[in-house]
Length: 356
Image (cartoon, rainbow, N blue to C red; front, side, top):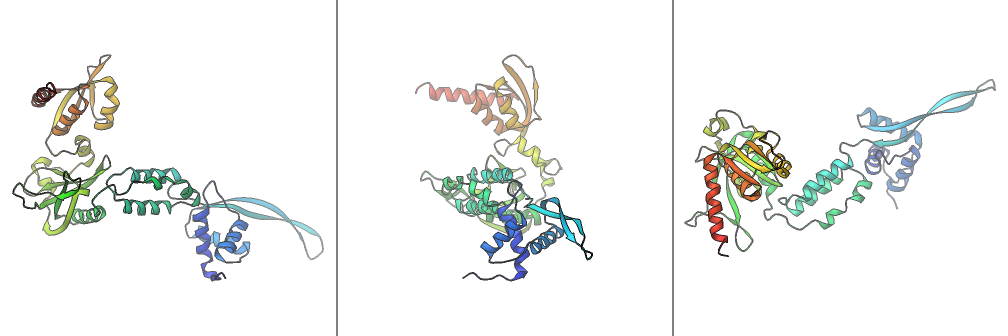
């Protein structure tokens, strides 16, 4: 036996039907809604009740679209003569959604490709995103079944984010321990050379994502520069009562607030070292890669048929790693100190490889 639902739930059930069954490609008539109410909600209502509640939902601010057509109805008046009156027929109802299917797929794919969100939490997030669409979208999202188990070994990622967000908002310091992998392929708390556990006390300024990893941009309290820590490797986090050191007070900041866009552009591998103006030569097929990595603020000069010179403001350690990764297609020209570093690295690498 079905439980007959009270009429007070009618408007909520109609909204539920619109959420579940409609979009711009799947529309419902008033009769369709009546049928679903009867078959799935055990509610027998007429079209007038459905129409009235649909109009109420629109009045309440729900973005419901519909089509309107005119039908001529013959009526017989008191004298016995016939007249034709216009009747407006409303049909093809659907709910406009905050996210399109393509936008939801983009968000879901972003979660699927993130290696640093635990599987169980990722599945819950995807389920919530799927709930923002209808049955037709959910039936197409099948790739969750191939999602790998446990993409990160730290299950408290979201707790870390909450505490860090609170600390940034309240301008307070945090303390935590940091994890690193051992040869057993498990995460272990980082220790000092003497074997004691190291506790980090830092001043948090911003969180940012880079290549699927979440970073905390902060100042290690003992020093006057900027550090970056992987949020998924933080454990035993604690919000402290002590006020955080203002970012503008750091020598590194030059008294200016943190410009996150500039910082992320200059720190392509999230290394914590000084920024410098670099000049390097690349092969022309590398141009797209350079713009993808460094952004459009780079400057090109001395272009030939095969090469072009690039100038950019970038983190020195990041530039060193970039040049190593893309050698010989990338050749550092300035500054001299970085050129010397690259020469020494190449000489050392050659000494190792020539005897293999």
